[in-house]
Length: 81
Image 1 (spheres, rainbow, N blue to C red):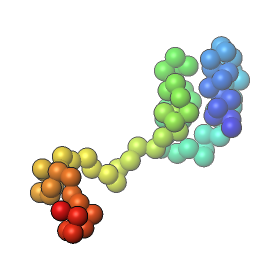
Image 2 (image 1 turned 90 degrees about the vertical axis):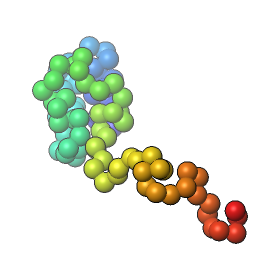
Image 3 (image 1 turned 135 degrees about the horizontal axis):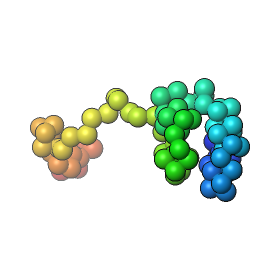
C-alpha cells in the first residue's frame, strides 16, 4: 500500500511524503526499481506500481520458434494434427 501512496503523493507534488512512504517499504522490494527511486528525482520514478516493483526476470529467454527447432504452432498432442 505504501508504494501506491508514494506514487499518489508524487503525483500530488508531495515529494517529502512520497519519499518517506517509499523508504518505509523499500526493504521489501530488493532488486526492483524501488531501490533506484529512493535517490532519483521524482520525475524519473517509474509511472506505475507494476513498473516500480517489477523484478527483472533472468530465468526466461525469448526466442523465435524457428530458433528452437520446433513447429511454429505446436499441437498439444499428435492426434490433433
